Amino acid sequence: MSLAVVHSRAQEGIAAPAVTVEVHLSGGLPGTSIVGLPEAAVKESRDRVRVAIQNARFDYPGRRITVNLAPADLPKDGGRFDLPIALGILAASGHLPREALAEAEFLGELALSGELRPVTGVLPALLKVRASGRRAVVPAANAAEAALVEDADVRVAHNLLDVCAHLCGTAELPRPTAAAPFAIDSEESDLADVRGQAQARRALEIAAAGAHHLLMLGPPGTGKTMLASRLPGILPPLDDHEALETCAVHSVAGHPIALDRWRRRPFRAPHHTASAAALVGGGSQPRPGEISLAHHGVLFLDELPEFDRHVLEVLREPLESGRIVISRAARQAEFPARFQLVAAMNPCPCGHAGDPRGRCACTPDQIQRYRARLSGPLLDRIDLQIEVPRVPLAELSTGQAPGESSATVRERVSAARRRQLERAGKPNAALGTREAERTCALAPADRALLERAVDRLGLSARAYHRILRVARTIADLAGSERIEQAHLAEAIQLRRLDREH
Image (cartoon, rainbow, N blue to C red; front, top):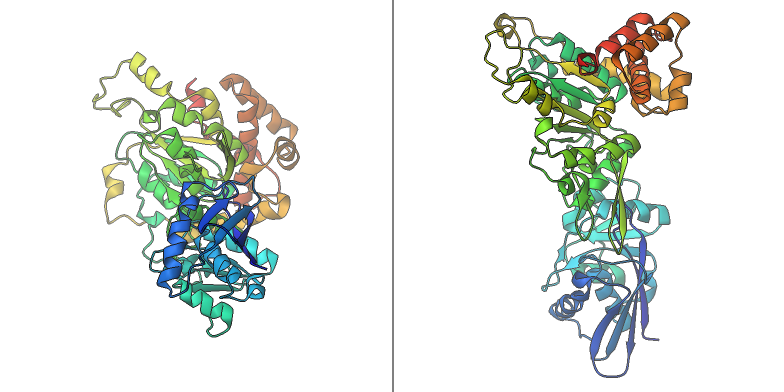
């Protein structure tokens, strides 16, 4: 029977649905047809595969070749099916044993010379292959991603001939080099570099401990960007699941993965001219945007009011749900987006409002219009809103004792995060409304204080619950079992923009 079946994987968001490549040889005019909803790149694979097989010194069948990519209703794109199609043709024509194909899944794009080129989305595919119990064969250029899935049987190959020799049992394909153990780089930006700004450092620690979003308001040159870039260094290290999920997003986006840095939390800082599609993702074949690339890490938006308002509004849903769904006419893709937002803005268009030297020439109307670029619903979703004032020159002196290092702060943050995970299984910022009411119970006097603050500041119900969550994080940092009045008062004080209303 001139029929061969090869297993592979498609790419749909960060999912990797199984695809069965069926190849059949029959009589008739020689030709190759590919069916099963292939995109243009997949249709072109017939030419790449034919030349690659010929350059590998195999005879290309002079028969009618039909390639079916099942399931038929799943769109297939990219060059990832070149290798399984070539192997299917060789097996159907008797050059390879068909039974060897049943034990493995194959991914890879073929060059005309027969060399294997890397493809995107290898890591999500390997996680699925591991669950299926099969072996995986991927291009050697994807070895860094393959090395992250330690308990899977993964082999890497440089060309089509290497794969054929492996299937025939005449040669063994190597395994990828194991990933290096995680170690924090000693040259990483340290929080000790920040001089002064005690309140901002405190807010950064609270944000890290509870995974809260943070907005910093202050004139240029006060250290807002410097503080934001230090946040990943005080966050708890990624666990295995989080690290693999983060790398899977970068794999789908086609970004290289460094084995010595794969457990680091991502830090993304798009420019304020970025479009909505760049932020949330998009394209005819949906790809992740900046908010998904910041998954389990930090998304830093500098000069927040300078972003287009439409761009900022698309942040509202993923800030709440932790995911983003990109819909197209023919397909839909979902990407994770559990990021921590850190934003910075000036107090006015010129940036010098409140300067004692009177350098600000902005009118009250100009300042109001500038700040009105941020909608109330978006600000409501930002837990911590602080002012970052100018640092006195004396505090900038190198002779001053440095503040706490990132390692010291990270120990407190990790201890507080462990309390949250043991109590609710998630950081405080991710608590639902009912969970927040149960976990953040207040004494009658403290609840009366919070109600007065909400009434005086005109806060929404969302802001009310966010203050509760921040107060719970402050209590966790202090090692307290219950929220005390000092914790609640500090949480209220950390909503700077609300107090201006």
